[in-house]
Figure (tube, rainbow, N blue to C red):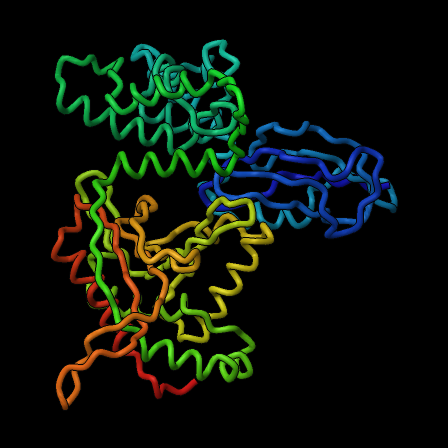
Length: 459
């Protein structure tokens, strides 16, 4: 009987660990190839892990809610056949073999980290003893290999690590937590020369975060006629990201109103023909995206991100589309190189992502790498909104509901009052790098493209 190691698979370039949410099979159960064995969660998305072979689960090595590093064996599967050496799961082994060599190095950073720690032990950084898997300085607190590697390279002390408020499961320190801390630490060191270099003080936002984190750990009590509901994992992530975005970016929102009568008339007249030709329903969202892509070509400095005192201009236009889930939570899958797709391609991508988001079948890489985002608040009947920017982007566009309203229309015979299809567009942008001229001009240009939509356009 051959034995196969089921390994925690690689779920994305920046993901180094995952949490086992639920085992759908138990020891002794038979499994078919591609049958789901367990559900896992990363900082990005939940996923189902299928069996790579037909066989019987002989051993489960990690319980539910355990955080496991990528590449770790999590179960053994016995298959029919002659006895042989233990093998890795074929599908997982292939992913690991083709992954970036940098990831392979990070997945087992202990040797490098021990060398660095030994060389810098006198500087009170993370020591060799501190770098054992899962904990530092005798603490039971878990630190992922990636977090420990960053701490070692940046000279983060054990005390600093222990003081960091973690936003991961069970208060775990994530990659973003330590990177945000390092950004704030460098700012404090530059502005406060009295702060010792070996034990830098925490920035004010982090002190507040620590305080709030301590308060959050206290379980509140429901009063009379109240119901206590704990946030699910995704809601906690959303809450953290929204607070961080507001802390990082000074938000400004500009509004414009657009007459989209020609656009609405074209869609109403051609939606059946469009679906017959391409096999896809045509909603307003891909039409909005098409206009956004055109406007980004006109104003490329809206398609940027900020890193310290530098602006990173993105040459790819990757549009994130905010999608509501049945649970009420929100996820933002990203259409990569959206500016290279025609309307049919955008419609197919939008429909595919919307469907798989509702089915919880999105892959981690499909919700990363966005350079600009769009949220259609009109889907909920809202006429406008002031959305929060997904970091590290600098702008997000909200499209409101399209409604019939009386409007002044210029004709060759003079101005007349007519019933028109009108909507509001609202652009929230990071005022550190996007000023009112750029933000206002960009959202106005999107409205212009929508108003100029050719009602005689071919399907």
